[in-house]
Structure formats: C-alpha cells, structure tokens
Image 1: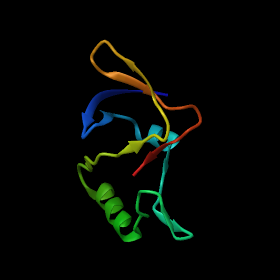
Image 2: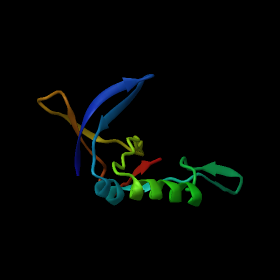
Image 3: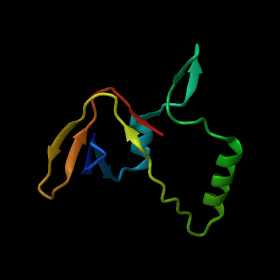
Length: 103
C-alpha cells in the first residue's frame, strides 16, 4: 500500500503527515504496548483502560456530531520507500510484511 504524505522535519527527525482510512491502519499496523519483561521495559503505548474506552464509545454513539480530531502516530522499524509527487507531496511504501507501529 502506498500513502500520500507531506514531508517535514522536526528537531532533526524526518516526519510525514497525511490521511489514511481506519480500516487500512488496522490492516497494516500493530500496537506496541508498554510492558516489562524480565526487568526490561519494552513497547511504547500504554494499555487501554476499560472505563476510558467505554466513555469514548458512549460519546461516539450519542453525540450528534461524533468528532475526535486526534492524531495517530505511526512508526516504522526499518526504512520506507519514498518517491516525490508532482504536487510537492510524497508517496511512501512500507516494507513488505512489516507492520507499522502506532501509539
């Protein structure tokens, strides 16, 4: 899958911003939950809290305009293939068979 994104740099790190369908995120990504394994801390995203997710679900079900303009951060462990588009944007492709990580 290719994603069309705008490229920018922040504090010396190359980043991209764009839009993607929820179905595509779920299909090609994985949550890297924070955990401790044998005294070693791994992962990034905290585990979901049931009370909080229930409140969010109720809001989305009951709100006349259920908007949550929250960004989702996707990271790639490895390199992305990047090619420039004529409109100043870029298309990136993730490595085949490797998930993007979100949190």
